[in-house]
Structures are given as structure tokens and as C-alpha cells.
Length: 317
Length: 317
Image (cartoon, rainbow over all chains, first blue to last red; front, side, top):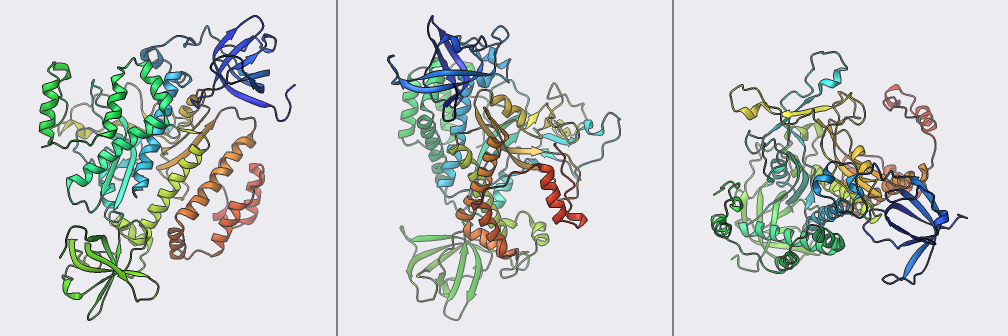
């Protein structure tokens, strides 16, 4: 039945509804775009065509009589690439799982609606960072990860050595790979500053590492950091404009390009509906500039409860 | 003389030509775009206005009577942000320095025409990688750098520990930061494959690390690697098309967007003029597909000299 030119819809079955004479399949390929509903007869669905399974449905689009969609996909053949044992599969199709539950199955998480939405939003945000700087004439620099400098003081470094594993099973002494101590970078700032003395606008968006033991949500051992260096600035105002522009541009890009994913994550987290309004206000208002200490005082006045108190920030002034 | 609305040209002086009644300054701000020639009277040039110094020239554009340019910049005031002591500065303005010489002054290299051109070309190439994958529906994934898996066998790993420096000067035993051995990633492949089981097209462009001791140009301890995973491929041909498309797209983008820099680096390296023609041919021809062993035989037949022999490749077949 399948021939050249036949359409093939590929993906993983997110939902499946079986009726006596017809099955309805909702397919997910991870792009985030809602696929047309697949309509099929029970006869061509083998027992392996279940929720969670990976399939190609061959067939054609047709007008739909159902409400809420103009077309549906009439499947004439279904090929199962990978079946799914729902007894062992940790995610139930119609159930909302907690973050704690998802976290136990790192390698399967991208199959869920929530994790794949977050990954797509992160993709949009990442590209928006590049778009902002590139459109404003900045050059992207790959600052090094392996570094012999500790940039911000020696309290939080990871050190890098050749693994003992490299010497097979024998416990031979490991020859030094580097001639001086090597650390994972805590910041690309020093390298960027050097480049900025020849290319006047540069930025990086690279992994950074801090060996800070902490139970708060402030610190990760590994994270991506945006850094920019701008020559010929005349005042702090120049830099604040770049920062304000970046925050607004990023937010606008994410809200527009990933609108469906943002709304989905928002609903899933049962966040207050004021949040989207607040974000909208933030994008369209001018940022107020005020000294750090004044800002801290305002925040502290608002957050009288001790656990909301801003205490983890270093005073820079 | 300087007022609001006066134009300010900012940058580093690359060349300066002094005459009795007029000085000609060629300014460089690292963007790669050729700036208009600055014309100024010797009186307003302090002794610090020299080659290598960092300045802002205030003034206005005017019609030029010189050949090869329609406008020039008439400077009425020159502010020196940073003078340059040419006795100590290691790069001479009109001299072509060897790579070996430049390499001794890593932090100053971005000031040279060659290094800044290479950094701009790298920026173009990096953005082209993202453009190709994004336009083809791929999602960018930040695969982790710190990893507990060794992906491609345990012969080439760096291991990561908390630095001894962290314990101030006392030699206290260092508590383990991680609960299991942690390495620098040699590849994001395993993580990408997991994500590709939920998002059908993904890629990464991240640092990778190999602790391979080698005097050849094949290996670096740290390098950036492009990896893509594509679900629902039907044949090797699907993947080869992605690869061919990427190589051609990248090359075309670099040749077009960084045309001036490419020509400059090309001239500086005295490369054969056939090279640009060969690249042009490569972009416009279809790639021939052949088994790896056949390709190796062809290359070995061409490169009879032992040092050109392809011997460092692993046989995958």
C-alpha cells in the first residue's frame, strides 16, 4: 500500500484513543508544532501501536469533520520502529508528573511535554543572545575553558588532571600533561578584555565553573555565562543600556518565538496569571537606575519575611 | 571645539603618515570595516598621537580630493585614551610578523590585522553553524561538560577535582565535591542521543576535551565540536546529505560574509590562488560518496611521501 510519494508522519505516540471502528493518534516529533490528528482503522494497528511507541504513519491528509481542526491525517499503514512497554515506562500518558519524578529518568525526560518545551525555550533564548549581540556589531569569542588563571580569587576552583584511568589497570605514576596547574575557567573576562583591546565589541557565551558547595539555588558547579566587553565606553550608562537592551530583547524573543511553549510551562507550573502581564510591563517600560544599596533596601523592605531576605548577595560597593 | 553632535571616531591607530602641514591617520576599531582616512593638522596631534595609540578623533566628514576614496574625516580634536610606547610595543606597524612572533604576545595579538581577521572569520563560521541547523529545524542543546561517562573508551580523559588552592594555605584533606569520578566530556553524543528520542532533530556545538599526547596537528586538548543527532533516518544517505549541506553552507557563508578577511588572510599566507577556485568548485559540485577504504587508498596513492600518509585515522569499518 505504501508507495513512492506517500506521506510519512514520524514521531512518538503521545495520546491514543481507541474506538470500535476508528483509532485516534496524537503524534509528537519534538518540534513543538501541533501535528494533525491521525485517524486510523483498528485493523492496521498492531499490538505494538501504543502510547509511547515510536512510529511512522503512512497515508494522506483529508478534510476533518471534527471540531477544532480543518484537516486530519488518514493513516493507511503504520510502521513501528520501537514499541513501548507501558508497564515499565515511567511516564503515564495523561498524568502530570512532578519534577522529582522526572528527575529520576534523565535520559527519558526529553520525551515529556514539559522537558521538551523547556529545551526548546532554552534554544530560543540561546539564539536570541547571539542575535542581539551580532545585530549590535559584537564579535563572538570562544574564550578558553582550560585556564591557568583564577580570575576572581582562589576560593572556588576545579583543577584538571589526566585521569588515572588512562594508565590501563596498572598503577603507573601519571606523567603531567600540562607544565603548570590548569583549572576550569570561572570567567572568560580576562581573555575578552585582551581581545577588546583590538576588536572593540566582543562577547562570549560559554560554560563557566565554580566549586562552591551550596544548598541554595544560587550556585551550580557548571553553568553558561554571557559576558561582553565594550571598548570606548564613556560612562556606566553605556553599559547599563547594553544590559537593559539585552534583557528586553531576550524576553521579547522568547515570548514571541516560543509563545506556545511559554504558555504551556506557565500553565503547568500553575504560576499566577499576573506573571505574563508583569513581563509585558517590564519589556515596555524604561528601567530605573539606582545605586545597589538603595535597591537592596527596597527589596529588604518588601521582603520582611526572613527567608525572602536578600542575604546571599555580596556587597560590591 | 568639541560639542554635542560632533562625530567621534574611536579606535587604535594602525598607520600614521606625517607631512609638514597635514597628518594622515588610519584608524582600526576591530570591526573589519575599512574606516575613512582621518586628515588632521599637526598642531592638534600631541606627542602621544602615535601608531598603536588608542584615540577618539572628533570632527566631521568632508569630500576627499584623494584617489580611491570619496570622503575623508577632518579631525578637529584628538583625545588619547592610551598612548603606545613603540620602543616596547612588539609589533611594528608596517612589518609582517611571523606566527611564532605573534604567539609570544597572546594578549596583544587581537590588535594585529591577522589575528583580528581570523577571530572575525571564526565568528562568522560559528554563526553559520547555528544558522544552518536552526533553518533546518534542529534544536540546540547545551550538552554537559562535566560528565561521569567516558563515551569513547578510557584512553584519553581529563579528570576534575576541587583545587587544593581552595583550602587556603593549610594542607587540609580536600573533601570530595562530587560523589563519583567526574571527567571533562570527550563528546556530547550520548546526551544528544537521549534528547533525540524526544526531540527528533538536535545538535550541539560545545567544547570537548581529549588528553591525547601528540606532536601532530591532529589533536588539541580542548576544541569545539559540532555534533548532530537525527531521528527517523532511513539510510546513511540521509546523514551524508546533512553533512554535505553543512560543509557547503558554512563555506559559502564564510566566503560571502567575511570576504574581505578571507582575501586578506589568503594573501598574508601566500596561499596558492588555486585555493579560492578550488573552494568555489567544492561549493557548487555534488559530493561523491565512496567507502572509507576506497577514499584512504586514493589519498595514500596521491600522498606517497611518508609524512603525508594518512595513518592517524581509526578504521571504523
